[in-house]
Length: 132
Length: 338
Image (cartoon, rainbow over the protein chains, first blue to last red):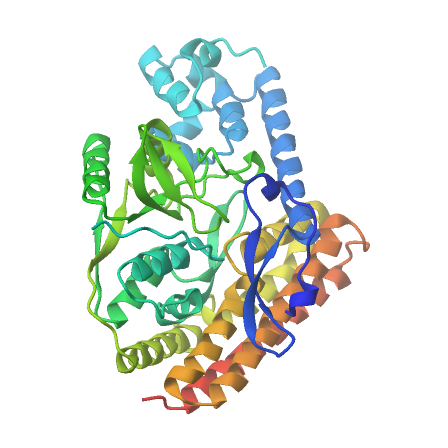
């Protein structure tokens, strides 16, 4: 990539930094330059966030319909998957999947729910009495 | 007398920590491309079956931690690394290092990194930064991807050091232990070692998902995605590829431009002009990676009609990249550098 071709588009990164890129100068030698962003990347990131919002909404609706427990919703809103949630709670993935069933969730002890609430950075009440 | 720590911005966090720490210990010649190349940083691996952020998992660089370790080892520098079970011990250790005035590298997760824009805070646990002091209870932070230095509170520091999930940092702290003067002969040997290691991994790794073969594997997957996942999800998958390839930390083109810059610098140390030619091959490869990103962007942005033919264009570009990199690594091997 030539120095003059380095994109300088808008990006969410601007509140933190411009990023360093490796580009060729007019003599064909490598140098570095700063870029404020690239639309191709920004679009990809925007799409990823749209997807997250959609998944969170799906999880919320699944809770209201009585198909999934709140664990599913909070996992999505915290951008986690089963593996990451398992890391934060120390609960096995197999069991987390079970706890996503509303009936199993209802039978969970406060002790267990507190572990989940801590991982989601919410209170026990917010998890237990989630309204959707 | 306490040496002053100097913040240096880099494209990639781990390279950047390496450059800053080695420069601090007196290795003035060190540059980001040298750390990356000597550390055998260039790589390609499409990890099958595992999903990251509900999308494909592929990487353009070697395992976190390896780049700095490999680069240091190749120059005879020992890197001390400590992970912790206890958060308290992790804090004590870091505070002790701060007290000693030794800048250290820390592996952190970005999900709770307050100075990162919210849009960028995913559960990515292999970010690296340098702690170079403490003032008013806040750690002084040199984050290599940033233009300037910043700070972190004790509480935030603990959170990011003990982020959980894949590649959990477990409070990891690392720093070069003993740094001897390094002469040009050692640098030259380190460069050659790095090139050989990268060549081996990119050409000879077994199976079909690593190295230049792995790039073709991804190409074949892309051909199938639209049919298998539907146009929308297939587009999201392409977006994930672009982010892993181009997002902050790669220097552009999936690290290929940094590698091209490394070969350019290597040619002076090894005194071999052919390396300049091969550097040009990697520039071309990086440009093609960028072109494939633009093509993928057209699909997920909806500028073209998201047809099978559009996915095939992406796949064909990756096939070309694979062939180009294969040739380039064969050229590197034929040089028989000693």
